[in-house]
Image 1 (tube, rainbow, N blue to C red):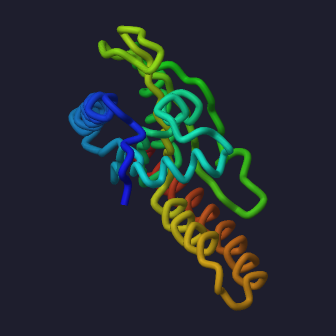
Image 2: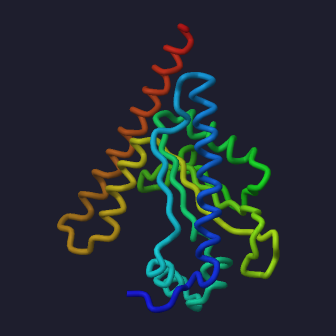
Image 3: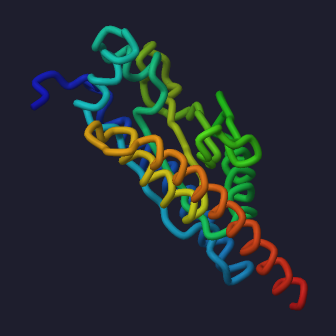
Length: 206
């Protein structure tokens, strides 16, 4: 059990900032439904990282277990995952996020076009959010970080399975499972492309 709140006085601020960005993403979804009748995404998952997890991450990265480390050196205290039905929806969500005036892209990795060797596919952003609250450096408006991952349902299912594999230490035949996961990732990716193609053909007919 955590006796030290690594987020300190900033914990309520993190929750407010998370609520605000989620509200903006939901607004985009509402606009898309109104415009085309189709949702911008299927699921939205979000959280402020558990305090124990943040303490553990500081240790893993050889950082002091301080609020400064949690809010400045590590940039995923706020985490958001947008899960879409189709590949095109991923890039539309990314374009929307980039259009937000209070949000600046700090890091960007497209693991869909540049797939990881193990088959992992997803779109990752580290963003800096400007908000009317004091940050860890004493600035107001302050700057706060969030990690945003955008992926399809198939990519998310695969990532969940791969995550289990990574953190379970008593697995028999790990080499076989890694090989099967890679094969599965490639098959799911092919399915995602086929689904996108079918959707494009349907929309072209209309």
